[in-house]
Length: 97
Image (cartoon, rainbow, N blue to C red; front, top):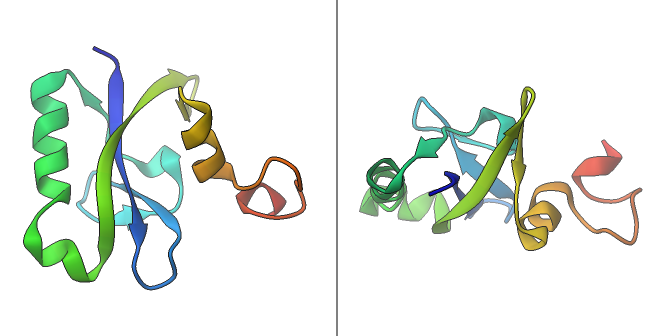
């Protein structure tokens, strides 16, 4: 099993967010809490799916990631796009900051 993190969309503005170690949500994937193994991933998703979070985020789910040095990088292209923004206009999205 690969490493996984939980991602969702923040209801306030629709931005992609990641569950952090302190139970908050961050726009930066490098702040995400990493689950290693099925049990840890299931527990992480259960925490992110708590009913009280329905007013903060929507659609939490697990994504596969890999550690590349100090960075956490999604393994699927779809998640890379969600993390960084549009691939056709690098002056838009998170990569433009």
